[in-house]
Length: 176
Image 1 (cartoon, rainbow, N blue to C red):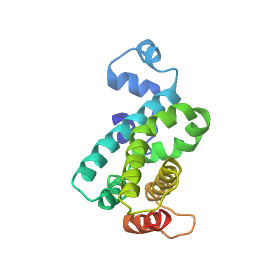
Image 2: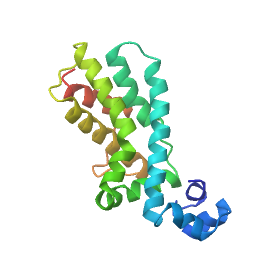
Image 3: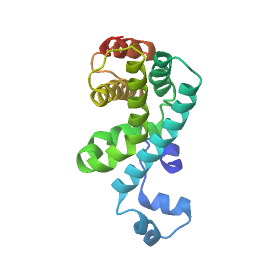
């Protein structure tokens, strides 16, 4: 991740990783079958780190709806546009196609937290959701897409919603 973050384009070679880590190429290939496997591991680590930070933000709130809002707002606030984020965004859809199970596993900590928060807000009567897992998937996709536009520095419509806009949209979609 450090090699990618320090590259102006965010791209890297496996040779650069080997040299930075001070390991042999053989050692790298004992853990990763290629660059895509390494990218998936990087994506997974980024998601775990994100989940921990989001959990801290959520823990600062007691109201179920405020906790859900903290998730949406902090998920976007954590975003640091840069070479590493750009690399992960650029490869996300390709990896989703070529490594769907691994990517699904990578986002599980974040999506599971989101599903729990939606279930809690539903149980408290703050929102109206029939299917928590579908609602969590849709909110996750909306937040992720908004984040991708920030990282890439462009939006297909030319409009870049901020975190509060995304939260308002999600809240209305959840029947809040």
